[in-house]
Length: 300
Image 1 (cartoon, rainbow, N blue to C red):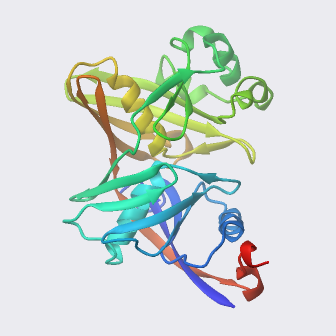
Image 2 (image 1 turned 135 degrees about the vertical axis):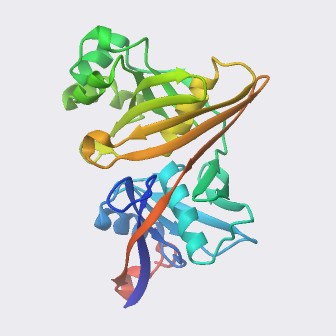
């Protein structure tokens, strides 16, 4: 039997049992793809992270898995992993940390209680398979409660971005699985990010959001950093040159309040996008893996 240790964190929060839960295996050397996927399915959290041996000073390859698939990029796993590596002495507060994910090298810096991630990609905007009318029907809302046409926004993981008219509409939204299968799944991107701009004046830009995804059944996510990054990039496209910041609250309807700080620096046509948040360690444990399951597929 091989013992593999892991930690449980709540991310994008400063207190336990809020934010988005995450499991991190800080020393995952020797685990193959199938075993990592099986472990993520066993733990059944929105994401589980596996950290490999350092490839340089303060540089670590990571793999991010949901219970059903691997992701090239996700925000709360990167922020949570950075906080854990700092806690374990595998990172230093004064030095940049590089996490090598499927989307590319991700720069993380520490600022007091925050870990701040710079995305490897700027935002890309594509057409969504949803229209204003079909998005309203998907969510059980009136057409006027959806503002404008949805788009696919991505900083490495695409989301159908749907702006709603009010916090009441956001709370009421309930995706219908049959409508999802008809209008969302054909796009190949089974993530929908709903949001309301609560305040867009001065320095106090505030957003409320919810995120739903499949496969593996309809899931709601309490905090989605990759979607927040894409939203910040999308909103910044209509701004002038400068630094633009938003505080994004998510998970309210789930009873797991989360706070994501998102910002975009616009210099002419270039955008640099960052998200930041806190995290707390809420537990630790170990899995005991039978030796025969540790044999890599290449060795069979």
